Image 1: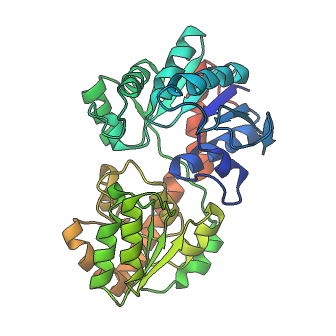
Image 2 (image 1 turned 60 degrees about the vertical axis):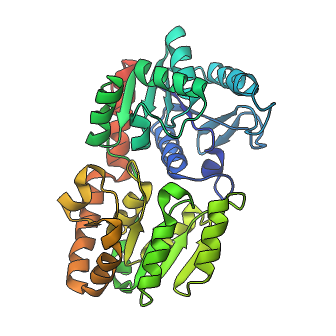
Amino acid sequence: MARICIVAHFAFGALQGGGTGHVGGVERQTTMLARWLAKRGHEVSLLTWNDGQPEDTVIDGVRVIPMCGRSEGIPGLRFLTPRWTSLLKAVRKADADLYYFNAAEAATGQLAMWCRRNGRKFVYSVANDLECTRSLPRIKAPQARLLYVHGVRHADVVISQTDKQKRMLSLEFGRDSVVLPMPCAGPDDSEVTKANGRGGNRVLWAARLDPVKRFDVLLDVARQNPQLIFDVAAPIVWSRAYTESMLRDAAAIPNVVMHGRVAPERMPDLYRHSTVLCCTSDSEGFPNTFLEAWSWGVPVVSTVDPDGIIERNQLGLFVTKEKLSNALKDLCGDTERHRRLCRNARDYYVRNHQVDTAMSRFEQLFLQTIGKRERA
């Protein structure tokens, strides 16, 4: 048995359930990992923002240790206190053998430094291609950039999602990494069989309404294909001008159905009735939505293709934005081709991303890093 601490600032809502708090791909992955490791008998702690939970809350065998509140402190000063100071307090309290982090932030370097000074192991996992380039377009603060680079270079192990990320890390940071398939909880075969009667005209788009996800491209495609229904599962962030503009445009398109924020436990209903998942992003790592769709035997039509997996395994279609509209129309209208891609998608998921298959690789890596033998 090992003591493993997962640091995931926004993950309390995903662990608690009920559709509260921020729930993205990272949060689903990290809480799934925490629960799985706890069931295996490991002593697992999860460090999150303080969202009002009592001290030392335990959920599904996972000990939740709160840091400061996400909005706590004075802007400009809270980088040091209470954010850094509360992180250090929490990692000391966790007293783990290994610390795991999956976000490109200052905390990457902060954790790496603490672990090195205290004889603990630190594993960092890349979540997006943009985290593998020295330009780091998403990290604006200079001190955060410096700490992130330090963390990547001094982590005991870096996990990448794709061979592309592995090459980028080597070129940009001089850093080797281990490629691991990401785990995804999916339905059993009987549930997928029942869903095989899904209609042939429903396109699912599931992401946050953010410029990099290019929701505007989807709306253009929807205007060009009134015969298709576009289901949109996306958190509504009213404070952002882009979101407000996109919502106004979507409201004027009758075949776009806005579902707003959809809790993870409700997403299967959308996948079950979808013909295809559509991705319009400019950049991705390995989207959790791809894995979820493939687990249901739903092919993906996408403007990004991690490691060429979609094309190589025939799990959908990889196209440019200019060809996206015709690709969706053609696939939804070709029953035999669609059925073949559905089978490929489900088979690929079962071979590579089922929870026990993928999680056991993480457990083995963690135990090897700590220097312990894998449990039988």
